Amino acid sequence: MSYACNVRGLSKCYRVDRSAPRGRSGYKTLRDDLTRLASAPLRALRGGPDGRSEEFWALRDVNFEIQPGEVIGVIGRNGAGKSTLLKVLSRITKPTAGRVELNGRVGSLLEVGTGFHPELTGRENIYLNGAILGMSRREIARKFDEIVSFAEVEKFLDTPVKRYSSGMYVRLAFAVAAYLEPEILIVDEVLAVGDMAFQRKCMGRMHEVGRGGSTVLFVSHNMPAVESLCTRAILLDSGTVVQQGDVREQVAEYRRRLMGALDGQQVALADLDAPGRRLKVFRSVAILDEHGEPTNHLPLGGEFRIRLTLDAARAVHYPTVTVGIDDNLGQRMISLCTPLRNPVIETLDGTCEVECRVANFPLAPGEYWVKLGLATPAERIDEVERVTMFTVLNGDAFNEGRGIHQGVCVAPTAWTVEPKGR
Image (cartoon, rainbow, N blue to C red; front, side, top):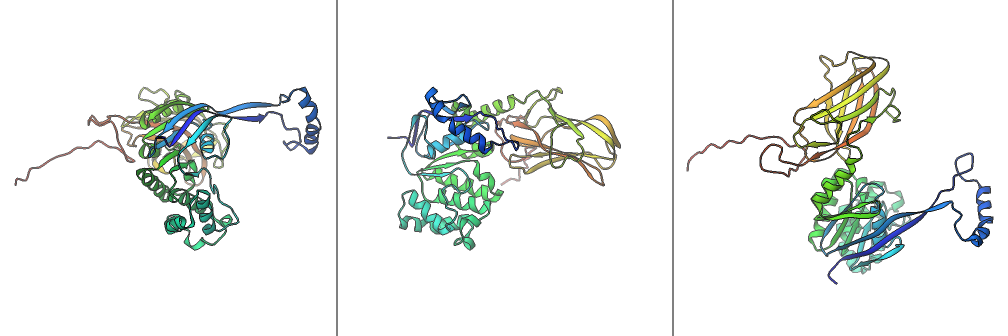
C-alpha cells in the first residue's frame, strides 16, 4: 500500500441531551436523575429515545488520502470537526461509519498531557509512551537525551508530571510525540500553550520530521504557520471536507469563508462585558475600505481605516484612544494612538465618532486582531480585547512583479547601483 493514511466515508455522530436542567442552581437535581432512571424501562418498551436528545454529526462522509512524507494542514472554523477527525485517526474515539487505514506508527499530541500518567515521573512517562508506540527499551534510550534536551525539563525529570506547569507538560509531551520516530505525527492546536521560542522549536522539529519521510497532520488557526509548514491542506466545514489541495488555495478559501460572515458589518460593543471595561465608552467599531464601506479584507500596502463610535456617560478630559493590532498569537504588531500634543479630543462628553487612517498599511499578509483602549493621564477608562479581526491579502502592492511577501512588515523600496569598475 502506497498511502500513509486512507479515509473513506468517515462519519462520527454524537447524541446531545436537550433536556433542560431543573434545579435551582441550574443543574439537574438528584430527584431528576432518579426519576429519569426509574422511567428508563418504560421508555425502552416504547421504542427507545424519549425525544430529549438529538443527533449531532461531528463528521459526515469524510474522504481523503495522504501519501508518506506529506505534511498536511487540517483547517476550518471552530466546530468544523478538526479535533474529532484527529481523535478518530489517533484511535481515541471510534467512528460511527466509514473506515480509517493507517500504515505506520502514530504519535499524537491532541491536548496537554495526552497519554501521560500524572502519578508517573517525566522519565517514566517517556518510557511508557515509547512502549505504547511499540518501541523497545533500547530504542527509547537512544532518543532519551534528545527528548529531555528539547523539553528542557532536566531538573524535573524525576518529578511526577502532575506537578508540572502546563508549559512543561506540553514541552515534554511534544518532545515524546516528535522524537520517538512515529511514521505519522498528529498535532493539534495544543502548541499554542507554549511560548514563542517553544513554538518556533516545534515548527522546526515538524519540518525535520517531514523531511525525514514521516507524515505530519497539523491542525492550527495560525494560517501563516500552516502555509510555511504544509504542502497540502484539507478544509473542513460543518464536519465535511469542503475541498483539499494546494495549501495556499485552501487557506485563501478558509479566509474567504471566515471573513464572509463578518464582511460589511460594524461590531457592536455597547453590551460587551470584559475585565477592563470600567465605563463602556466604546459603542461600535468598523474597519473600512478605501471607499468608506465596512470590510474585513485589506489589500497589501493599501489604506487602513478604522471608525470608532464612543459614548461617555460622564465627561472625560484629554482622553487618549489606542488601537492595538495583534497577530493570532496575541503579539502586538502596531499601536495606533491619538497624539498627546494637540489632542484629538479635549473633552469627551456624549457621543462622537473617531476615525484613524494609515495610508500605506505596512503589515504583511495574515490575520490580525484589533484591541481598543481609552485612557486619561489619571486613569484607564475602557479596554476591549479582540473586538474584530481582519485579513491582509497577498498581492503585487508595489508593482514589483511579486505576489507573495513574507515577514512581519512590507514596504516599498528604492534600489540604486553604482558601477565601480573592475
